[in-house]
Length: 146
Image (cartoon, rainbow, N blue to C red; front, side, top):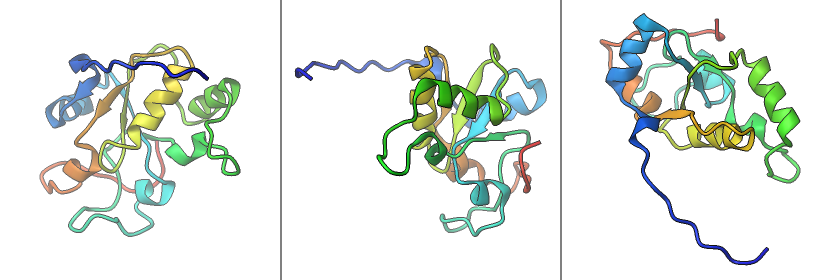
């Protein structure tokens, strides 16, 4: 491909704070999907970050970012397979969606996949489990997504 110029622009409407996610526990207005591996999400493996509790934010869905990639090539799967993966994770079409992960980085892989599916509205909780998992005053649950 020919070289191209990319101009990034900050879109504050696509960033969620701890306060936003905490309020969403009550409202349920947005679906929140966690990009961490299933073992970290469900709390069956030790957390990689010192001091973080095991588990996830209550009510979160789970779609490990690695599931979106072909392990042989490292490339993202074709759109039809991406759509199936989001459906299988329990994502309801048409509802607002927020991605989270361990530190806010791999959540962006989920947002890229949604972009490839024609949806540029997925927000990111950039504090992710790095922030939430340190706070004993915030709820957490273990086990699979409900």
